Length: 434
Image (cartoon, rainbow, N blue to C red; front, side, top):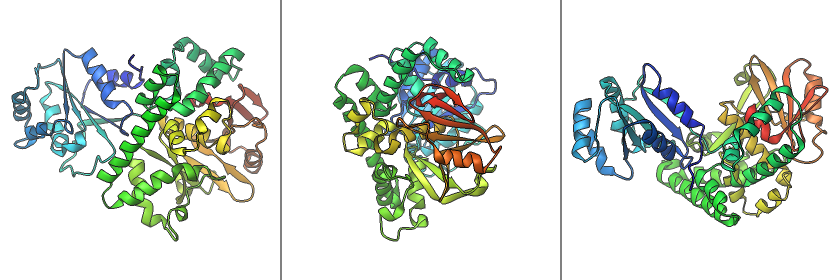
């Protein structure tokens, strides 16, 4: 099994080469590839790589039971057979650090000691289920990891960086991609919707023509997520599980808004807010809030009681949908379920770019899928997964009603790059360049 090439490795290298280096905390949902990536980086870039997983080896927590000065901790870890600890040439990796809050507190003293480099990793699933007495503020740089994005998936499928560069050049110049490359990319895009970016699912897909193996891996991940909810979400676990399981059904509705009333009669945002936030904090779902106005800053008109919930990964969304939509997607029907999967893909692509998700809904005339702060202006995206992507009444209304407000008016669709009047048409796979 080949290692999947991950973009985060270049961020790790930037961190290693930084002047006033602190500890690096790699956050993200379970099974997005955090441990594998840190391990690959540590073994390639350091003479000594020491990995301590606080869930697999609970006894390692004892190293932090006494004084938290660096010398005592290193002696305690050495006594457990870990090492060698060689100053200036050792990376220590604390994995599942949420299971050892004292190790998180000790990071301050270990960084101050200065002899070794430290990376911590934790799934946001339960990262606060045990209280940390003192966070290492100022001694920790945080970075978030996501499932493979479409570009990483393309690399995994043997497409060269030159091809991706050519597509990027077409995006920058707003010129069409050559026909055969566009067809190849749309084919890979449809596969990506089904497979998603969870490393175990991608590897199963690359090794097997049988899609059932990929779906099996996705179902294992979904089971693990449900187990984590039961284990870590405390009093909110029943509500969090109900919300999690309802995401596909709610995205399947015409306006895709999340209606709590579908879970329980008379359900209120307040009652379900903590459980919803838990899933978002855990990285398994993404909030997309409604805005009531088209002006910056968007947070001023954000309505926290009106939102859509997207899954972190389209492959998991497909696996949860239970109605065998994979074959329809493979055969080119990405309009399935009113483009639910394509819209979720765009939401995940924007989230990976650190773009907060907002949608605009003006009952009578206008519903815009994504509105975002693009530099000092607003830009808008409509996701059109069917053949009639040039028909976009809501977008036309928004442009007419708000002259000069939008910097870019983008329709993401199955067609090639095209600029027509006010509107730019881009292939769905180009969301990776936004």
